[in-house]
Amino acid sequence: MNHYDLIVVGSGPAGRRAAIQAAKLEKSVLVIEKGRRVGGVSVHTGTIPSKTLRETALNLTGWRERGFYGQSYRVKQHIDAADLRQRLLITLDHEVQVLEHQFARNRVQQLHGAARFVDPHTLEVTREDGELQRVSGTSILLAVGTKPYRPSHIPFDGEAIIDSDELLDIDTVPRSLVVIGAGVIGIEYASIFSALDTQVSVVEPRSTMLDFIDREIVEDFTYQLRDRNMKLIFGQTAEKIEREAGGKCRVELNNGRVLHSEMVLFAAGRVGAVGELNLEACGLEADSRGRLKVNPETFQTSVPHIYAAGDIVGFPSLASTSMEQGRIAARHAVGAPASEPPQYFPYGIYAVPEISTCGLTEEEVIARKIPYETGVAHLRETSRGHIMGLETGLLKMIFSRKTRRLLGVHIIGEGATELVHIGQAVLNLKGTVDYFVENTFNYPTLAEAYKIAGLDAWNRMDQGPREAPVATAQSLDSTLQAMKKAASS
Image 1 (tube, helix red, strand yellow):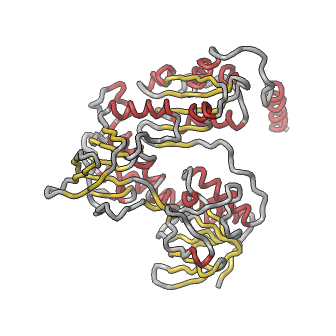
Image 2: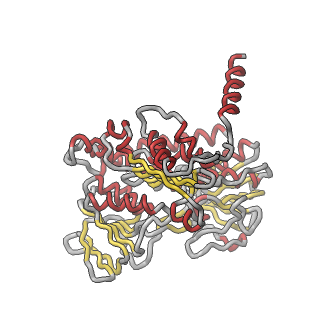
Image 3: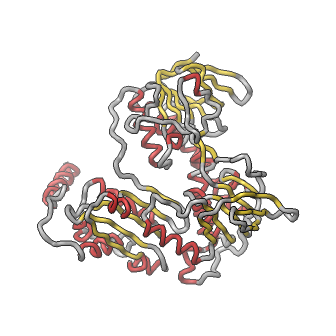
């Protein structure tokens, strides 16, 4: 039986980053992947496929150019499922090749099969040919990710009543779609198919959606969705879903309302993929949603040498944060010093339009009783936005009136998930509103919205004595001069 310093179960964002980090520290590492190809849910059914589908839909429909050429403008008149899948397969092949190369270059060993615990340090792997192989590890990281929640009363058929994983294998683009669940996954797919001119209805049991996002952003998002005739039905549940004789789907809500559509997407949550791990053998127990509780600083479970990272530990369930969790867990597992998880990280929702946020929402600032001011810029106010034909989108920043520091940045619109990193950097460096007012941004760019929003807040804030900035212009200038001198020597 082979023994390793670290065994990683799962090769998604958390697993692959952990494996490569441990290997770079010259530790023996084994990655066990259940699927035929590495990459996990992120590469094959989650992050990469959904974002590729979004980009393909926006390109083929000409969505970004409709501000100039009208709502009837399309790059391709008839878009079918094969058009959507073509780009997806190319992207997935590239992602897998990159990951395989990274594993090979760092001498990370791989084993394909389903893993289950035999004891706290030993795993038994059932390979595709049925052969059983046992391996042991000094430390073990569980990064198995999640799978769609599939309640027993939903008659999934993989054709017209599907979950978010099955959506990638559809044969036709439906003319009508009912989405059950207005979480991140549900609302992303709902808005993407709406951009494909599918008639979409979203059913959500709660009275609101995306509660962790700033309310002003959600209100703008809701308005845009309804403006293009998407039906948002809040406070209702789907009591019964069935196929009718003609092949269409019938969705009966608890208030008696009936919805008809060609397809139903059930996207009301995901559960940890821990069913086959035999957690009892190692002393762990998952919650009702298959998630494992961990130390948020080290990602250790209740069994000290067993770690967990990624979606399996719950919110925020992002590929970006999962990678960092995996890296931190791996360093701690092999005895290397590890930094604390970042205080501020961006959250991206790849809907149409994009939403991205970092830091405190206005509601959180109010709850903490922090005196504050906001600054807002509409993307159409920028020259770049006008050139691009943008009619919607806004950037909102929240500042402390006392310290002038940036507390949160919230963006909806084209390029939101890229633009947010400027605000993220200022947040982590404890920057103030004065940075945005005094800084120079490329022209014309959407990033100019930061200056517009900064001025919007600055004009309503007291202009009295300021707290000393984290880095003065003089110190920055000295640093630049030193860098230039080092480069020329």
